[in-house]
Amino acid sequence: MQRMTAASPDYDSDPGRWRAWKPAQDVHDLVAPSLSGPVLDIGCGEGRLASVLKPGVAWVGVDSSMTQLAGNPHRPVVQADMNALPFRNRSFAEVTHLWCLYHLDDPVPAIAEAQRVLRPGGTYYASTAARTNDPELVPEGYPPTSFDAEEAALLVGRVFEDAEVQRWDEKLVVLNDREEVRSYCRHHFIPAERAEQVEVPLALTKRGVLVRATASESRPSSSGSFR
Ligand SMILES: C[S@@+](CC[C@H](N)C(=O)[O-])C[C@H]1O[C@@H](n2cnc3c(N)ncnc32)[C@H](O)[C@@H]1O
Image (cartoon, rainbow, N blue to C red; front, side):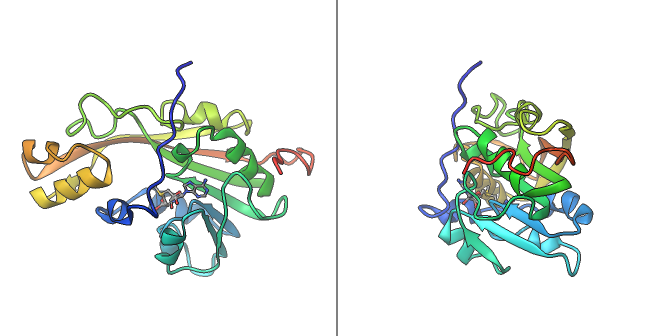
């Protein structure tokens, strides 16, 4: 199998890149209605999941970037690496890895860490984009990363027995003017000149997955610990 590379995190060195563009709707809106808490939001960033939770749902955010945590209005948050979560086994009803596992060379130990802190019967969620995302701007496809939609279910399935996938492949995003296309390109590491070559408004085909899985009731309490 081809060795995939991790997307290098730049959230502290270039926070403007991540903040350049924000979708009106995202996978957070798909996940949040199912969450009853306590939720552990791993790689929580600036709190987009916490912002759409139902009222009263207990939430804890974890991220390695101090810049992201400083821009996150929700509390409590903890600075930690997702490969070594500072929480006890079986502490959370739901654990999320939304748009973050592609930052790791090998996402599987972090998925096992997520399973370790999930209560038996608790639900795990992970999202990522496909290499064929945004074909109108990236017709040649995005470079492979360590956690693309093409392999996400396989990788989650190395830890959880019942990984199931919800895919999307639709024109979900409209970029209304040239400036918005430029911002989108910056946010997605797309060469800047592409923004000048497309017609606006631009309807973009979004391709990606949400993987859901359940922590088994029968696993031993020490299983999956990498600590
Ligand atoms: C693309 S952002 C997604 C943020 C958020 N989940 C969202 O959906 O808006 C990825 C986040 O993962 C965090 N991250 C990257 N590597 C990490 C690691 N090893 N441990 C914890 N967080 C990490 C980054 O700092 C960043 O906030």
